[in-house]
Image (cartoon, rainbow, N blue to C red):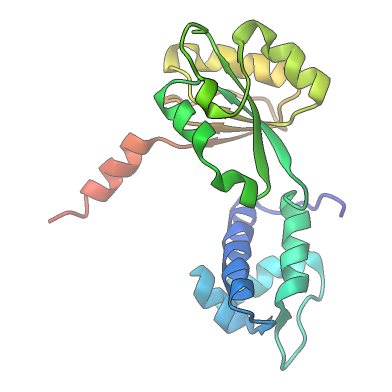
Length: 205
């Protein structure tokens, strides 16, 4: 489907709806009301209806949404109707753990290669090729890869980001503990585990 202009927060909620629909589908549920789906996703019914309205009239009054049809619509919108290739930059402890995670495939993503400056370490158990950083730019250009995961030290994260952008990467999941500068048209999602723990520690009594 054509790329729609949807607010970033709404795109995040689409993923929540998609996960809820997957659970319903696994339980052989064929239709779901906006109230039930919004509760499963943890949002208000009015918010859910507003978000889904970007895709036109999807539900039927009195019946709700077809789980199969809505799942397909969201898969196409999120770009997971087919396996989305991803490159992993930084194959240390965290990067290796991400490379071993097999849940990405079920969600429509495939880590196709890792890149690292240390080529002495044995990573044959990861199931993906690990290549030297010098081959990064050519690799993503030749294969037209648009998505990258970054788990490199903060000192080199911006330099690597610049190379990724130059190669055509349009979206980066950043695990490096630094804020990256990226041009318009390149989306960066930051995952700082220390900040998340600090946030949770505030609520501990």
